[in-house]
Image 1: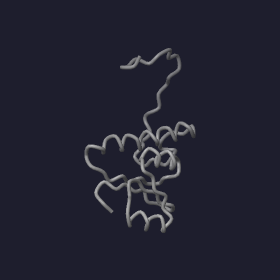
Image 2: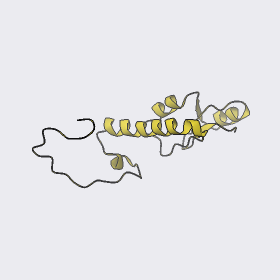
Image 3: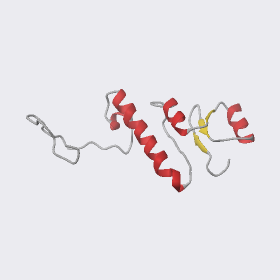
Image 4: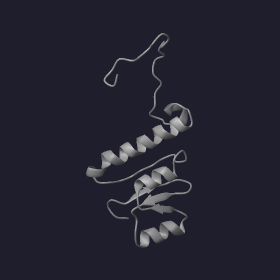
Length: 109
């Protein structure tokens, strides 16, 4: 594998941007390869236990954010909280009484 290669490992592994002998071996082992990390995240939505995308620092933020966005969309589609989807870093917040609220004050209000 080369610097910048991206792979997600699991029972049926997938990878991105892998070419040459490495891609041949991964396909032989049953991996699905993608040329774009968005396509991989979309294809694996709700099924990935772990997604590791080793990349250069310039791409780290956008790829990490895309993965988190994918988690949020999956949770919304399933009508679950992140912690209920198995996201280990998700922590419950304190209960809030929202009876009588007409609007929430804040930067987007």
